[in-house]
Image (cartoon, helix red, strand yellow):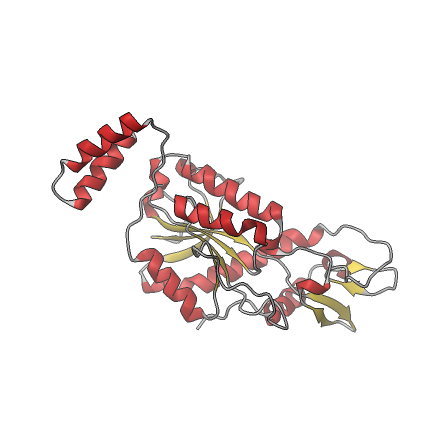
Length: 288
């Protein structure tokens, strides 16, 4: 059974990366000659900005997400694929999907073969010190000065922007659910926003796959009021949420119409006999 994000995953990242990257590419070097994953809150010396780790942790977390989703995908006769390109829904070679569940293993896909999209917004969560070639945990994200994963406003905004770009690319994207996959909580300022994004159908959820991001488990949000954000506490819970995503055929729609025009559309759609026919008629009319 796949394992969710833990401290062991972060140690695995540093261990694997150290085979081809220098300590200075993976850690901050302080005035005290100590290597830190993040600047600790107690640190008062000179500070620098570390960019070299970003692409490394990005590749690692995308591969982690593929492995995490692969078992579920295979249970549906599908595949979890990294770096999917689909020009017709705005996924270019320069901005591919981080992970997608598809009908084939190909990285270049048609929209009809894409069953779900996952934008991965993960990073190192805990603070670590490299000491004698070993990673020593210094504390959770409240003990350092960094904002990892979904706690960063720029990560949230990039995820939202990319999702909107997919949604407005055309109607071929209307049936594809979009999930933002993270390994941290979100800030309180985004609670209502993620719920609104879910209710509006733009994004189907911000999911964290880190069960215990805080060592003392304090102030550890489980979910927002409308489940726009959900923290998965086990793989079985993640699997259950994935099942919910795949159990019904979703349809995104949006429009800006005056009430008179909207009323006519509803009246025409209501003339159909079955609920599904009414929905199909409504969607065809609102998209004209």
